[in-house]
Structure formats: C-alpha cells, structure tokens
Length: 201
Image (cartoon, rainbow, N blue to C red; front, side, top):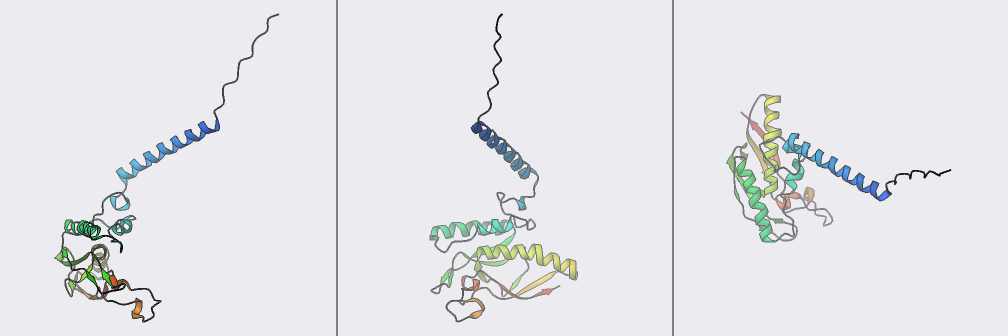
C-alpha cells in the first residue's frame, strides 16, 4: 500500500512582512490624501502653499505669516533676506511699502526688519508711515482687508476711510510696568499696533 505525502501548508507571512506591508499601505494612502488636498483644498488652508494677501484668512495663514518672523539671534544677512521676501509679498498684494530704519535702544528694545506702509490697496493709517516689523505689516493688511473692510460694509454699510493709530513702537514692558520681572511689550519690538478708532465714509 503506497503512502501519500501530505501537502505542505503555505508559509505564513512573518510579523516583519506584515509591518512593512502596513507601512507601504499607509504611505500610499498618505500620498493619495496629499495629492487630493493639494488639488482641491483652498491654498489658504495648505501650509505648503505660498501666502497670498489677496486670499481670505485660512487655517494655515497664521503659520505662513509666522515664517516671516525674524529671530532675535538672526544674522544681519538673515534679517535682510527675510525682510526682502516680506516686502515682496506686500508689494505683490498692491501695498506700497518701503524698508524702514532698524533701531536698538538697548536691552529688549530692538526693532529688526522694520518697514513702513505708505499707501496702495489699504485703508490709510494716521499717522502715516509708522515703523513696524514686517510680519506686523502683513497681519495688519490681512486684518484690514479681510476683517475690518468686510465688517464695515456688512454691519455699518460704509467703507473705512482712515484708521487712527496710537503708534507701534514704545520701549516699555507690558502695561507700562516698572517691574523688571514683567515681560517686554510687543511694542518694544514694533510688533504691535494700537488702534484708537476707524473713520468711515
């Protein structure tokens, strides 16, 4: 009587093979999701798309503006490169702007990458030509175009004619505190603007 050999069971995939298969699958899914987002999502919501000040504020706008910031430890060359890119962004959006004079009043009162908004497609600011860090200028234009102007039209049925400002630079701590433990104000870096009011047409 002849004996029959039993068919051998198929090799089971090893745990390592399962891991690699899962990684490849996840990678393909991630690539597919990326291409879908890149093709269909609004550019303002995608952090890898360039910032466009003509576009409404989106989920990624704050992160894009933050990339324009100048680190306090940056070299003069880095400051100029970042500020030049920021100036170009403003000009592409129809804003008239020029490079301002940086200043160092000692301690934490240092302004680097200063610019001055002088006109163009923006609500005029009084007094005009205030010196400010370039990322603040970008934030101001975004607020003016996509918050202030639409609100004036929709709520008050008018156009903003002028923004009255109390200034951007002041070498002081928050709330004018004399306590050395108090943190420096953003005004000490020309990185904040106080708005006194808005005049309408």
